[in-house]
Image 1 (cartoon, rainbow, N blue to C red):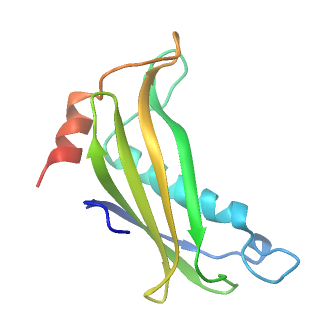
Image 2: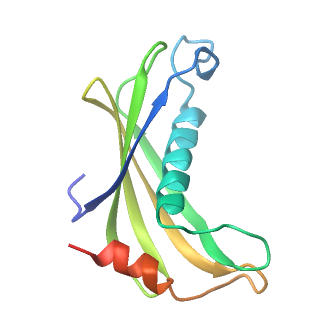
Image 3: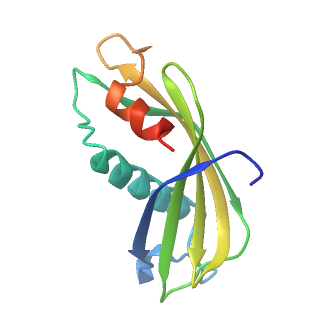
Length: 134
């Protein structure tokens, strides 16, 4: 991807036999699960607690470009990056690699929301600081 981006987190996950579909490769929906798990690990690293009735991150859009099919066995490395940071949101990008080879590229826009009102709120200061740190 040709966006300005900063590495936030690297997650490694085993590719499970059950992740594959009838074609014998990891089902497209599972790529989104890998990206979700990496995003959750990054948020936990930033000590973000997702809870009902409070403020927290939600995804307003997500995408994935599937470059090569993944297969079992293996380990997927999910690299999460941040791009543009706004008042209440940040654009994230993801590279999914197996054995150092790029298999997919993804993205998700994360917006901070007040779960009681459904309206966006400013990013928490500690999250903004982590996103904007050099």
